[in-house]
Amino acid sequence: MTQAHLKLTVAAAALGVMGAAPAFADRAAVLETYADIAEASYADSLASARTLKEAVDALVAGPSAETLAEARSAWIAARVPYQQTEVFRFGNAIVDDWEGKVNAWPLDEGLIDYVDSSYGGATDENAYAALNVVASPTFTLSGEEIDASEITPELLEGTLHEADAVESNVATGYHAIEFLLWGQDLNGTEHGAGERPWSDYATGEDCTNGNCDRRAEYLTAATDLLISDLEWMTAQWEDGGEARTTVTGEEAAGITAILTGMGSLSYGEQAGERMKLGLMLNDPEEEHDCFSDNTHNSHFYDVMGIRNVYEGEYVRTDGSVVSGSSLRSLLAEEDEALADDLAAAIDTSLAEVAQIKAAAEAGFSYDQMLERGNEGGEALITAAVDGLVAQTRVIERAVTTLGADDVTVEGSDSLDNPNAVFQ
Image (cartoon, rainbow, N blue to C red; front, side, top):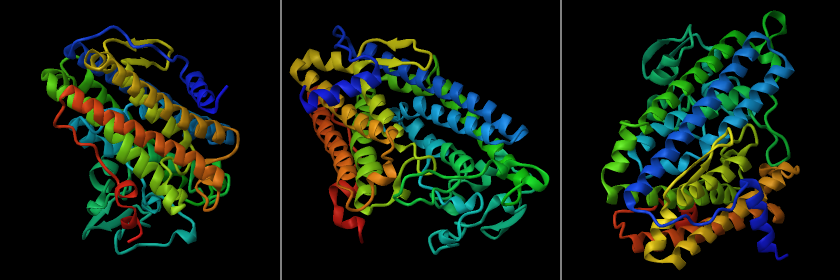
């Protein structure tokens, strides 16, 4: 068996199905499938967030090593369907405008809670980088005194999130919850995730690091807000929802949305900002899931989301399948060889991120892969970046073939102008 064949086999095993191109389809049917997959993906994300909420409630009600571990496991499980939705982001303004509330990163975690002394304090770029809302029942923000005696979803969303228009003031979403469950990862490029003790949620004399009741309030509020945000987005893809109506309402614009999402996630976002940049800087802070060391899964399921949309098939968390007319079948009507080329390119990218996932699960964490001079890690990440870039080039050929002239693929300095990264 060749190495390339082995990699594709690993990806196929992770997916559970390789799939063949379905029968040819018209554009309207392709757009309906796309919307159906979006609706199912967000519905699964919502259901898993509700499961996370149950685990968070159990942690708050009965803090222990076991309930903290269960909440962490629920968070990791919640990332599986959500990461598969990211392909809907770039081509759909309604998603892109909303996404920053639920998945913004990196974040200045000192805004939220205590941090190690090595973290530092306020900076010229962010005066609130070490605000520590958990420890601050009142504080001054932009000259206004804020009453934070009760930590609520409204406080997080309406006051704290992106405070002072600073993007790194991330107060809501998956990564705020991740930080509250794991704490900082202080291992650098060594193996190991954050090690927040369960006693950070304990009561009375068992409480560590102070303000355990307020920390629990913050975690609960952030989880409640995540659920409400996902409820809203799921509704946008249901029958009559704005996202579905927009993408299915005009065929040319809908096909543009699909290709924009696939190309921009492949290139500027994942290959560039999430992978190449961290490798260039050798910086574990550039990991997408940096507190939990779950980045290998995030990368894998991002590519899976691209594949779902292209093949017109999504495997739900309960094992059922949503499928229908696909972009692949539409492209095959114009150029069957190109349709097969794009399928192969996506499968190759999936195989490369599957290798990263397998290595991390075997104990070679993504942090370690980013270490300067770590040839094995660099090779794994570079192969995935190269696969994503090659995949994007085939997507660009598909754009031309399908006449989607309005597609703009987002770039990244790490890929397009590497010298700018160090300026």
